[in-house]
Image 1 (cartoon, one colour):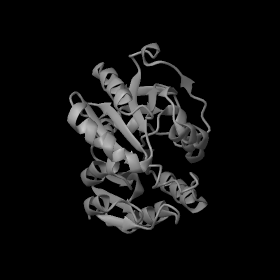
Image 2 (image 1 turned 135 degrees about the vertical axis):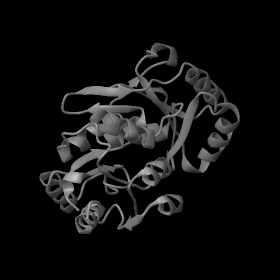
Image 3 (image 1 turned 90 degrees about the horizontal axis):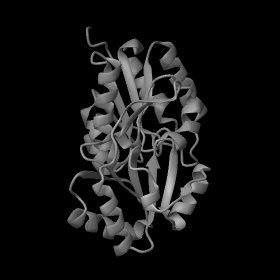
Length: 272
C-alpha cells in the first residue's frame, strides 16, 4: 500500500516501547522509511506532555499525538494543545472517597504539562523514578481545577481489583475509568478514551480519507484497535485486545513496528 494513504497510531508503553522503555533501532528506521514515503505517524498514549516528551523526541514526530488516554490532542512541535477535555468537578469527590477507603493509595493528577501527587506511595515513587520526573506534591484543593486531564491511581497489582470494584459501585457517574496497566487505574472525563481521541485527531487534521492503522497491547487500546481499518495487537497484548485485532505481530521487545510497516507495504491499495 502507498504509505501516503496511511495513518499509523500506536500505543507507547508495552507496544512501541520495549520493557526498558526504549525504541528498537529497527523500529526507528522503519518509522523513518514510512514517514519518508508520505505516511503519517502518531502516538496514542496514556502519558501526558511531560511523560511523553522524551519518547516523542526520540521519534522526531512532527504530527499531533493523542495523549492522556484520549483527553488531549497535542502538537509537540508547536508545544500546544489542539483540543482537550478537562476532568469534571465530581472527580474531586471520587478522589476523597478513594483516599478514605484506601489510605495507602497513590494518586497522581496529570495537569497540562506537569504532574501533581496528592497521595504518595511506593508505586508512585517507582513510577516517578522510572519516568525520571519530579512531580509537584500538593493537597487536592491546591491544584487548579482547570487543566486537569486525568487522574492516575497507582496501587500494587494484587490490590487493584478492590479499587476497581469500589469505583464501579461508588465512583462511576460522570467519568470514565480505564485499567491501563496492572498497577495503574485511570479516571478520565466521561466519554474519553484513546478511540475517542483518535477520532478527534482525524477530525482536527482532516484525515477522513486515510487508512488508519492502530496498534496496542492493553485494555485502554482495545476500542482504538477495534475501530481502526487495520487493528494490530502485539504478541504480549491481553487476550481481549488480540480478539479485537485484525493482525497480531511480534512482542514489544522484538521490533513490532517494523513488522507492522512491512505488512502495510505488502497490502494492496484500496483503489486497486
